[in-house]
Amino acid sequence: MSKNVVEVVGVCRTYKSARGEEVHALENVSLTVSEGEFVSIIGSSGCGKTTLLRLVAGLDKPQSGTCSLNGAPIVAPSPKSGYVFQQQSLFPWLTVEGNIASGLKARGVYKQYKDEVPKYISLVGLDGFEHSYPHQISGGMAQRAAIARSLINRPSVLLLDEPMGALDSFTRAGLQDKLLEIWRANGTTMILVTHDIDEAIYLSDKIVIMTPRPGKVSEVLEVKFPHPRHRGGAEFLGLRRVILEKLNLASAQPQPEYRI
Amino acid sequence: MTIRELSDVKFGFTVIFTPLGFGLALVASLVIPTPDAVINDTAYQVILAGLMLLYLATGALAWFRPNRREQFAKCAPFRFVMGLVLLAWDLLGTKYGALPMPFFPGPSKITWVFVEERAFLFTNMLYSLRLYFCGFVSGVVAGVGTGIIIGWFRPANYWIMPALKMTGVIPAVAWMPFALTVFPTSFMAGCFLVSMCAWFPIGFQTARGMQTTQKVYFEVAQTIGGGRLYALFHVALPNALPSIFTGISTANGLAFTTLVMTEMMGARGGLGYYINWAKAWSSYYKVYAAIIIMAVLFSLIMKIISVIQARALVWQKGLTSNVEERG
Ligand SMILES: Nc1ncnc2c1ncn2[C@@H]1O[C@H](COP(=O)(O)OP(=O)(O)O)[C@@H](O)[C@H]1O
Ligand SMILES: [Mg+2]
Image 1: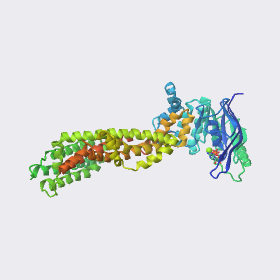
Image 2: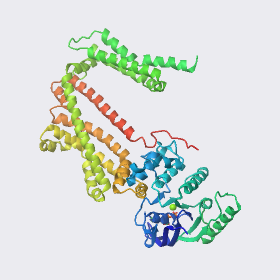
Image 3: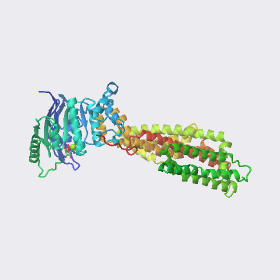
Image 4: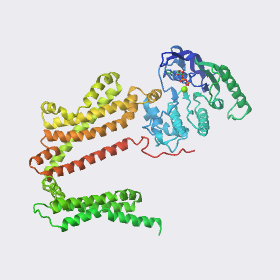
């Protein structure tokens, strides 16, 4: 049994809404992710997926419960947990190359590791775009650059918050394959937030289903069948039906909105 | 006949057309006698010939670089009419004395000042340039410095920002009485005023540019291992750069005004001082000469700033063309 990289135990996080009401974004959420695992978190909008990911990244703190990374409590953001944001987050004033190198520069280790920059540019397939600025490249390319910027620090876990949410389905399929390729090449532990059931099945070892109000983990499913997974295959479609049912059963809302 | 040949013919026409106005003005100046014996036409004629040569040369250059042709052709009517305007002014002012003197001298009289008084004008120009650089550079440094402090430290924003906003609306020259008594030399007083008028807009824009940084960029800085200094110098400050340049452009206009006003009111040198001095002698043609130098000088400075700005902000949207997604 491999060691646990991320451990979230009994975490609660409440926000005050603008009207002063308490919003239970997360209530008693627990999650463990072991080394090299690819975990997807799936659930409707507002069920606390981003909140959970931000807690793991150290960008936010729980009111109760604990989060730890490699056995140590998470107190602040660190390059040990890479984070790819939902919105475009490349520094617009740096080129693709500059953005990827900024991962090293921020830690002050650029001189030591600068040979890594071209390797990571190639890893995410951005050769030839080193000198482009973020506004000159497409959304898919920008997310790949953001992934490389996090990966260059060799994080213990890469946290991805709906990195493909804003992409068209072709670009999205391409990025999914890229992500698998990177995962296989680097063995990085990944936690991916998504609202796309197919994406979760296609990529992950483990699917965490969350439900809203209050945000909870309702189910954790293991995906056992091997890669490459055929999106039209019997196992794939079977699991897809199971997840759809779970989401419907688990949801408090009569007609939830799932973008598939 | 191919399209290429046709455009050569058309373009050849614009190359001749462009300097034609100046040519006509030159011919008129040479052929028609000047009644006033005191007026020397030489400088004016040399300038006209120089303009003709300049535009013929740029036209020739554009002939071999077709991408410059359109720009050259676009300017052709304006340059032609500029020549005609000079021609009309010369006829009315110099040749037939139809304009009221001494307020509206002809172009010959004004341009001859550049020769006649070149040393004095040049010294005064250097005075102005020195004042501009000392004042403006220190204003930019002080403005960006203040802006960083206000934009980065919350208490500074609370206490200093309102003061900056309130004092910012006061024209810097209003402080002149104090500046002149507090500082030992009029140069230092002028320097202070120019620097102060640049300080406010730049400080304000720097702070605003930093404060409008999207939160996600700071969070990115944290997750890639950057500290406070990284967030300041590699996130907030680059984010403020477009705004800082907006401040610099505003400040630049104000600095020219303040510069000339301080020179006119207390200085012992500079183009503003020269204008005052010429006015005292009712030499209005010299005032025009100084104004022309200012126009050229300030335009050059603005051009230099905009070139620096374009270099520093290449990363901004809309300044370069988009690249297609590959693969
Ligand atoms: N900073 C915040 N302030 C107030 N409410 C928040 C904040 N962040 C999240 N919430 C609320 O917490 C709930 C969960 O949000 P989030 O984690 O962003 O959901 P998801 O990513 O699954 O769409 C939502 O109801 C949201 O309105
Ligand atoms: Mg979210």
